[in-house]
Length: 171
Image 1 (tube, helix red, strand yellow):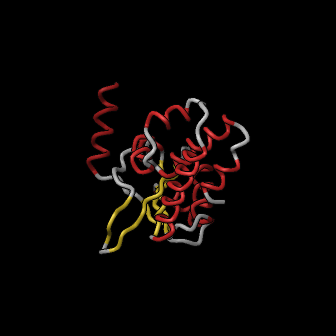
Image 2 (cartoon, helix red, strand yellow):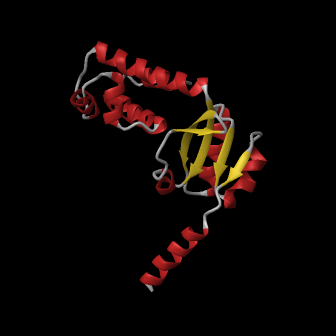
């Protein structure tokens, strides 16, 4: 089910609508301020909606139309899933990346356990991503449950040295 459809199904309850809108913004990796700029809805209006205040139907239409635009963007281009812990995902600066002359959308899937990673991989495959990038420790398990390419993130030498320095400082 598409994100805008899920949002419309939650209109019965103000709390459910707000939670679903927050979830969709997280999935799209779009901060409220950026969503405000893209949709043309004042930030203060969106903030009030997030606080549970009532809003106009015209505002709802613009929210749904903006979410639809994001969904169309994602279906027009190839999407690559990034499965990692939230702190690692927060370091990704751009939602789009160009590789070998072709543009790809990076879709983040936060996971903290092996089970979360497997569930995220299955969900990503169902959503139509073209490939998955994940940590080496979970790649073997993910490759067993999906039929799309899986690549691993290998930390650079500097990352290990930085981690060692942090640990030594704590000793």
